[in-house]
Length: 371
Image 1 (tube, rainbow, N blue to C red):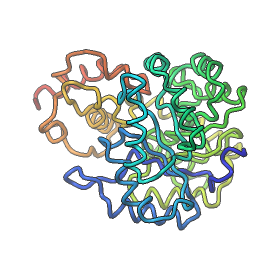
Image 2: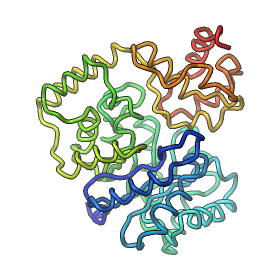
Image 3: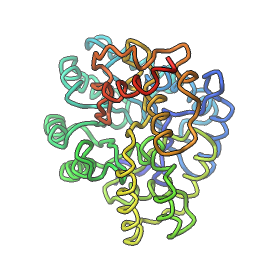
């Protein structure tokens, strides 16, 4: 894949889930240590977006990466998000502010963010793809791609209408590979037919595949001493048309585990695929809420309901895991599940296509005493 020749070792640092301190501020000291280890271990691809971490991700990268290393030491990807522009004239000022926030003069890779039937029309009406091509002609970006959350049919439409797209970022993990909603495999096959390399996002599905029930965990333990996350990352990285796998690492332990996995990468074998199939059966039988904590829902919630935290609490309680805080702590100073006005903005924003309002109604009933 000539397009990604400059990318080292097939693992990217996703910058949507930087570690946080108790007060909610980004733990810059730990981000710096993670960045240093990532680069020292022979990796160089960083992925951010303007909205990540309440618009703090880009600025954090400037402090941890671009302000400390020469431009040749890293590959940087950023994204054009539809929620930050309403007309074509707003795109260039936004783009320039992204360059400034990141502390660079160009992006190696730039993506039309989270393309789907919900926002593609907005990008078309505002001439966003044309503007991106203009940035590329001016040397402000080197490669143009899209990140995508929708059906394979809609992906076919975008790639047919925009052959200038060079690569596609897809949600791929072993749980979603044959999922009827996410349709990872079918979307991957569309990219292959169009000869577009794939970047994988959510290889461990927001951490869901890194912390398994004992019944599922034992399937991997019978194979080797690798972590549950390592098997998920290797599943995605083993696909022939995958150029690299992004991992949204949120602490040093996750960074170390991923570096160990991908420094000596080996594709999954038949025994591991059989174990993965059994793990999928266990997870589906568990029936938890498949939230990846991407927080796109909270960005649009008019009631400031901490939806991912509530869903994580419900999942923990349903499976006997130890929850991180109780309902009162999670919702302190924020909206309660019972305050949902059923506007549906969360469901339109959700890449997992979850029935968020129905889950919140269940939460409101479950925790009504706590409220």
